[in-house]
Length: 390
Image 1 (cartoon, helix red, strand yellow):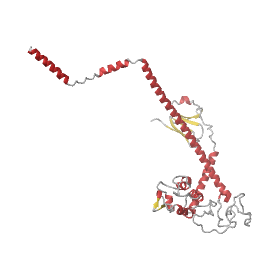
Image 2 (cartoon, helix red, strand yellow):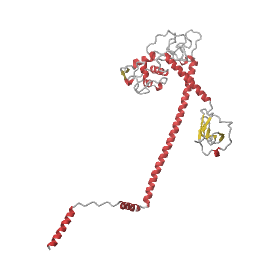
Image 3 (cartoon, rainbow, N blue to C red):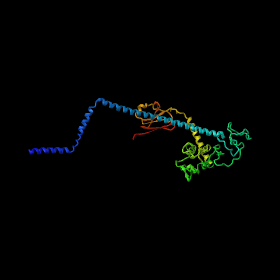
Image 4 (cartoon, rainbow, N blue to C red):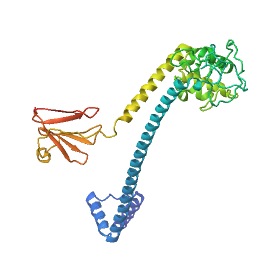
């Protein structure tokens, strides 16, 4: 009996110890079992669930395709609009060149018509007389031409000897040369006084705000911290003019009233005439500009006289071959720059076709194979290159 009691107590003790030990985590099933369980779950999914998921993915795909097509169409439209804008800009530039040429011719023909009312010139010439008098009573100079209609000015009726020009005085016209009727604006006589009075306090060697010094001709032509401030001949591209004209910030003079319109116009005229230091430099710049305008107008006139579409070639010696059969592979194709004409290099011949691919000629070549072809810039000559393979 004692032995039975001992075994019972031992059993109870083992059960108590087993209860006190922490339970070990169950081991995960092997991968094969996991895969089988997943397949079992998928097999239990009905057909309607699969169909709903497929419809959802199909709608997403169509949405992305539609978005891509819309963006491609928008890109094509933008490219077309950009090309149209570029063509419009070219036409406007051509019109500007023609107007400049017309203005130059009118200045030469009209004499004093392009000249602003100013004090009389040094020599009493008929072309130097003021455009109009404030009173009907005029000087008794025989046969002096006057414009038919001119606004009265504040010029005195009796011309007096010109006095020395004060600071910022109006420019005087050059006496000789191809730009004799143009009033020359120079740095020393007209622009430097403006800079000294309105700009030098903030833009001098010891106080160069913005990195620019306007006290000397060399310094103002050099520019400032943001680069060149003057583009000779182009006031609308010159930051100096744009800032004093209050067309570009910061407006100048800073924290002050804008310059009087006549001073702003004088700065613009100075830049238009090349932003020159003296009259000789300004006259040289205007002569070169006038010559360039005449050349551009002549080129534009020649281009306008050229027919828009060059005539198609005639009288070409043709081999009489059907190029569709003789040319299994095209080696080279190029379009004429002046006519709706295509040149195609192929097997021992050069084929010429029009824009609708109608055969015009099949010219034989001595080379075994023609690989490349090219037109001259005027479209009158076509060249072919090729040779023996290897």
